Image (cartoon, one colour):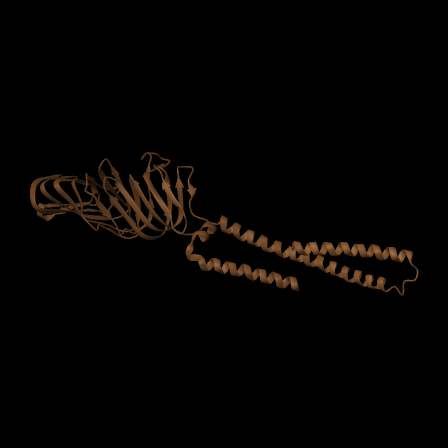
Length: 365
C-alpha cells in the first residue's frame, strides 16, 4: 500500500514536470503541428493523468476495505472480550463450618455414621418393638437422646425437594432437616442410655451385646425443624449427593428480620477448567454458585467439614460481602486457553485468509 502511494507520487511529480515543459514550449513556439516530441509528451501526459485518476480510486477503495476488515475484527474481539461464557466447568474444594443443600433426589446414607451420643429433636415417631417403644403422633413433639459405647446412625432417608443444613462446631455435627419427610434408624451397642421426652417420657438404661435398633420418623409438618446432633462423631463421608442448590451461608442472627447471612467458609480454592484460573478462597469470603450440572459432590467430616464439588455452573462469584467478583471467564479468554479448540483457530485463520483473498479480488474489479 505504501509502495503504491510512493509510486503514484513519483508519477504525479514527473507528470507535473512534463506539463510545465509542454506549456513553456507552446508559449514560445508557433509552428507546433510537426513537433513530434510535443505530440509524444501530450500523449504521455494524457495517459499518466488517467493512471493517476484511477490510482486515486484504487487507493480509496483499498483503504475502505482495509478499514472495514479492521473494524469488523475489532467488533468481534470486543464482543468476545466482554461477553462471559454461559456455563463453565469447575472443581471446588473448601472447608467450612456449615453447608446448605437443596436436594433434587432422596438422600440415603452410603455408610454408617458412628458416635457415642446422638440427640434427635422434633420427631413424630420413635419405634422399637424390642424395647417396647411405640411413640407416634403428628405434631413432631418427641425428642430422643442416646448415649452408648457406640451409637450408629445406620439409615437416613430424606425425601427429595427437602433442605439439609449440615453444621460442624466444637467437634460436634448437626443435621437440620427442612421441608420434607425424614426416616432414620439408630442402633446402640454396649452400656447404653436412651431418653425419650414428649407427650410420653421413657428412660432406658441397659447394656447390649448386639446392636439394638430404634427407628425415628419426622413428617416435618409443623413449625419446628428436625435436628439430629452427633457428639464427637468418627470421620464419615456423604457422597452421590443429588442437589439443585449449594451454599455456604448462615444467619448472622436467627431473629434478624433483615435475614442477613454470613459466609461459613474457612478456606478453599476453585479451578475453572479450560482457563488458567485457580481461585483461592479466604476465610469468610462468599461463594455464589448457580448449578447447571453436577459431576460429583462429596462432603467429608474429619475434625471439620470439607466439600468437594465438580460440575458445570451458570454463575460463579467470589469475594467479601459487597466486593464479590464475577469469576466467569470471557469468551475470548476461554477460546484462547482451550487447547481443544485448535480447529476453531484453524478455521478462524482460514476465514481471515479468505477475507484477504476477497479483498484482493475486489481490488482487481
